[in-house]
Structure formats: structure tokens, C-alpha cells
Image 1 (tube, rainbow, N blue to C red):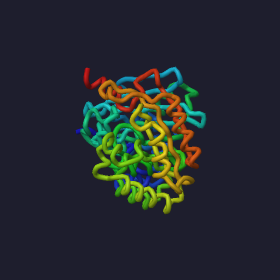
Image 2 (image 1 turned 45 degrees about the horizontal axis):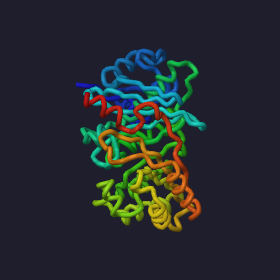
Image 3 (image 1 turned 120 degrees about the vertical axis):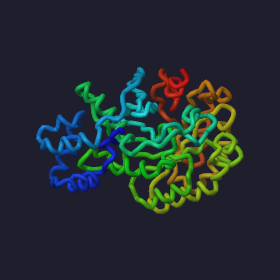
Image 4 (image 1 turned 60 degrees about the vertical axis):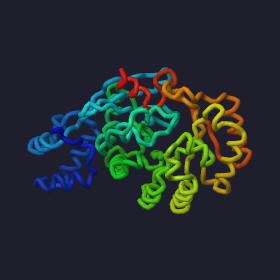
Length: 351
């Protein structure tokens, strides 16, 4: 039987677990610091922790439940990791070097059932959810890789935008957020964390009520129900009206801005008409909504979609700004490797 990842425990859960076996609370803080402060890769490296505690941890948990299968590094410093899980499944994690720090994009599921027609992640349907420990471990694997380089830096930002729908793995995703935010551990500030959803409206309400203080992004990609249903089948079950109501609830209760992600697909959703419709859809929410226009990374299996022309992207952006909508064009990372989310995993599985 495979032992679970030690990274799946919050500080409170680790404390309760060690207390149950007769260890004092101070022992928990020691172990926690070795995991996230000193970032050991083996329990035996916790040199000032009593050997009975180390044996206990070794008997019940693993520090590494996944291995590095492939690592691709782009000319801009972006690194895409393909990790192999204990059961042989493959997941992707990406390190992006931003002006403001080092950002890691994590995966929450093995495969995806949302089925967006342009996305490489959905080429292979969901096999299972990742545990909270497996999601945290992605960050630790990246951080350990950075540590091996000496002055490699520290992960400062996290985006939950990898393979899978985070809100379809809600409890594990929330536990993951609580672990990485802990001020005695990785200490990733809530303002530096963004969670993306394709639009599971009921979970947006639940997420809002938890008041986790992290940012919300919504994969919109179309300004009307007809077009959105064509490219995102989830819209048939959860149309824009329900999604926008949930977004309004989030904005009203948290007073935080929502980022709308919008992949630019040539001749499909990138023309003046769609820009005007999107501005109308956003309406007077303008100050609490920002639109992130995303250049499309072509996927071989979805050859009906092409990248929008630069002029069309710029014109779309200009129309939104002229209508008072906060808009930006996403800076691309890793364009000289398998840039699309899920692309590297799909290629390896189909070999």
C-alpha cells in the first residue's frame, strides 16, 4: 500500500496526529520547519527530531509520492515538469519566471471532464482527483529543483490553472490552499494565489463563503450562451446567467476583483461583435472585473482552432478599454516547448 504524502496535512492536522502518538506540540513545529523551511527531501535529514518521531513519520507517510518524468525548459526560463504519480499517472506542473517573482501553475486532477473543445487538458478524460498532498507536492518538487541550483529562488506565487477543474476537486483544493498559505510553512500570501474555474457556479458560492482571501479567475472564453456552449459544453448545464450571478455574489461579499480568462480563437470569438457583447455582459461591473486575453496555443487534435491575428487581439483589447473594461493581453511563457496545458502529458500517453 502506498503511503500518503506528508504534504497533505495542515499544521493543525499534523499537530493532532503527533499528539495522538504522544509527541508534544513543539515537535510538530520542528517537523513543519524541516518540511517547508529547510525543505528536506528525506525524513532522516531532520537531525534534531527524535528518532522515534522520524520512524513514526517514515512508517505512515512519504515525502515523495511522485517522480520527475520529463522536464522541458524554454528559452525564457519557463520550466514544464511532467511528474509520474505513484500509480503511474502523469501530471503537468509549470514554473514561470515573472517580474514579480516565481510562479507555479499546479494541476488538480488526472485528466479533465469539462471537455472544452479547444483544450489539450480534456483530450484525456479524468482518471481521478489529486489528493491535497499531491497538489502541494508539485510546489515542493519545483522548489526542490530550484534549491538544487543554489541561488534558484523561492516560489512566491501560485496559480491553480493546470490540468483539471479545481472546483470539481473542491475539498482537496481548499486543503491545499490552507497548507500553502500557512505562515509557518511555505508562507505564500493569499494575494499571490489565484484559483481558476470553468464556471461551477454552486462551488463559487461555497468558495466565497470560506473567505480564503485568494483571487478568483473564471474561464469565460465567449460573451454569449450560444457561442460558449459550442466551445465549452459546461455552459449547457451552467449558462452565463447562473455564472454571472455567482460572480456577483463573490464580488459583493469579498470586494475583490474577478479575472475573466478569454482565449482568443481566430474568427470565432475575437471579432468586434464579440468584444462589444463582452463589454455589455460585464456592464457596470467594470471596476471589479478584469479581462485577460490569452493567445491560443494550437493543439494538433483541435486543428479547427487557430491563434487570433495580433491585430484582432489588439483591436479586441482596445474596444474593451474604450468601454471602460480593464483588459490585458497575457504575456506568453514557454512558447518554444509544449506550451498548451495538457499537451506534454497527452503526447507522452499517446506514444
